[in-house]
Amino acid sequence: MKICPLSDANLKGPNGPVISSPDNEAPPPTAFALDVDTLARTIYGEARGELVAGKQAVACVILNRVRRARARGGRYWWGGTVRDVCRKAWQFSCWNAHDPNREKIETVGLENENFQSCIRVARRAIAGTLRDTTFGATHYHNKTVNPPWARGRVSSVEIGAHVFYNNIE
Image 1 (cartoon, rainbow, N blue to C red):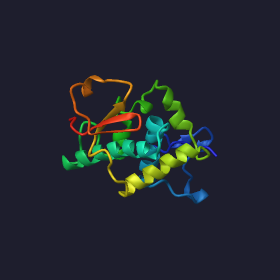
Image 2: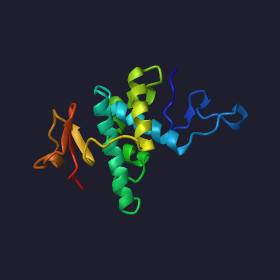
Image 3: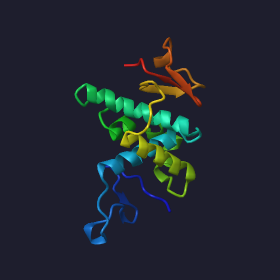
């Protein structure tokens, strides 16, 4: 069974609404469900090749950004909610329009065991039961690249194939 991504901008599928109407008895998704879906798809796009620890670390970065925004009155340049942070242009490449991962994250469904793992991590993260193993990191990159924003910075931790930073504004 494939599921369509639940986002504010995509509530209709090719055969009509993805979200059922009251006649169909299914309630619209809650903010929690929309956040879990967006976070799980971001984890899948950014860390599907990682062990659970790597997936959790990516989730922590997103939640650390949300926390930092809330500490500054609810907004920050990358957004103030899970959905805003995940979908902010040029922040998580899997959401970029022409990134090859974009189609993968939009079409992956519950039949995919790896995506199921991402959903479990996202639920725990948003419920607040995920321990932050990144030491407050708000940024990361794959070990195979050296982006300009990371040059000269000391990382907080390396988990799986990613290097994490907690000292980037």
